[in-house]
Length: 108
Image: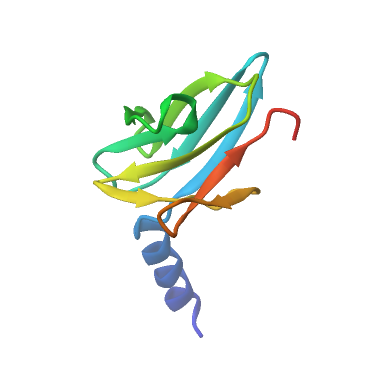
C-alpha cells in the first residue's frame, strides 16, 4: 500500500469523529476530557446526582471538559449529539438498560 493511501486512511479515521477520553486528577478535582471532532453538543451524566445531564464546556475546538470532585466513586457516561456514548475506560459496569457505564474510582 502506498504512503499516500495510508495517509488518506489515517486522515479519514482521524476526521471521522473517533472520541478519545482522559481523566486527570489534580488535588481534589478530576477533569474528564473527551476529544471528538464531530459532535456539536456533548453532555455528561453521572451517579453523583441521579444521572442529570450537564453540558460539557468546549475547551478547545475538539476537546470537551468537565471538572468534578475526585473524593468519591461514581459511574458516568456521555451524550453526544443526543446519543449515549460510553468511552473506552478502564472500569465499567452494566447498567439497568443493557448498556454500560464507566466507573471513576478516586484511589485507582
